[in-house]
Image (cartoon, rainbow, N blue to C red):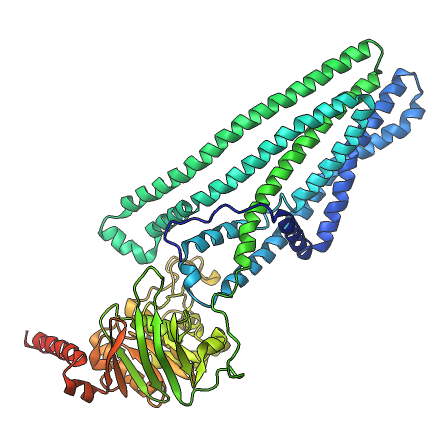
Length: 619
């Protein structure tokens, strides 16, 4: 894992041809006929400027030679048709390009978030470098790749136009053709270098952009706004946000100034070539070397070649930049599994219904090689059908142990067995389908009450009876049912339902305790799971509500395999097995009576809490 603020290194361009092919494959999959239609129009539009130049030459030379109007009618009709095509084709191209862009964007977003959802663990979401890559990848959308999709067709059209006009120019002046081509080389090199610098700037500024977004969201975040108002932090965070924005804009300004200087020099070079060519054409015509039509065709050809070459250079540079951006998308969508499933050592490997228990054998774990061990040689058995309570001071490793049981991480050393099967030999999704967990840092979704609970088991999200049963078990049914729309009430003030859009009071805000009960109901939606894990299930409840919840949970956990983590030792005293974790090691285990009799760490903590309650009663 990298440290905060680290940035991804600039990408190499050696794979750009492969990336170009990948983008075009994506574009074709997004809309095959759209791609074919745009290609056909690009070819036609590419040939039109040369056709216009030659038809114009023939008309002017015919008029100068005194030809009759009927003889020039065909060229005139052709010129008019070319004008009509030139006027109408861009609108058709714009429509086809917009539709393909939308389809490509949808396809790319689908693939990107499919890749993100495939990450089974947590480590990548804690890596600042990967988060920067992901942010860059999200910008490589259908719109950002236009220079490589429809823009590449524009490049093709510019190539066709340039070649056809250069053929015209070559007939009139081979030397001038070479000069115009030579002038395009420095323009191409300069634009490519500018594109690379622009992408490198975006990469280097990515951490600053993420911090700017973070500070901006923090100022308006509903969860943070209480402390921000209480401690007067609004201007503090605003200052930080503007400082990050200033750094980002300084980087953009440096690039813009470099672009301004380069473009000015390129424009001067183009003007010099055009002016020199015009002077040569006029002097040659004055000596009878060119006809009036030749001069007209020459001027049109020089201007057209320079315009098409300029468009070609700009298109190549933009495409180069888009491919550099797509490199991040390709990296984000081609990550190897973060929690690979090893081949089952015994040939089975499937998670079966728990019948014996879960065993942690000599488990060691740390979040990063630069940090200390969180768990050190933990040996623990969670017997089938029994309730185990895990207690200890903050930082003892309790929540980390839960993450390992859910296989959000793999142990650095040691093994976790599920009925004798190493859980690393099992697909994480299959393992988690047999576990119900209430996390200490549970989520509060800005959805309806029914959806908040039903998310615990998507197969039952439309089963109102199951949702209500889970809500009753978590003692939150009455609170939800009493709301204006019952279980269909939106538990958010960030959005509104379409039916309530004219109601300024739409949406209901829950208290912390109500949210905790709702999260518990979401966990209890996972009926019939083999393992129930409850991490501080009553930390946000008052004394009476806590007593009621734990009474219900005792009934629910009876005869089930469960792991309860709580600092309220009175809530764990009836567990079949109480395990005391300290400094990442198990220091005691047994039932309440056994641990009290030995007078160790558990007895001291329990006595301290009980003494505090008795002193409170005396007061």
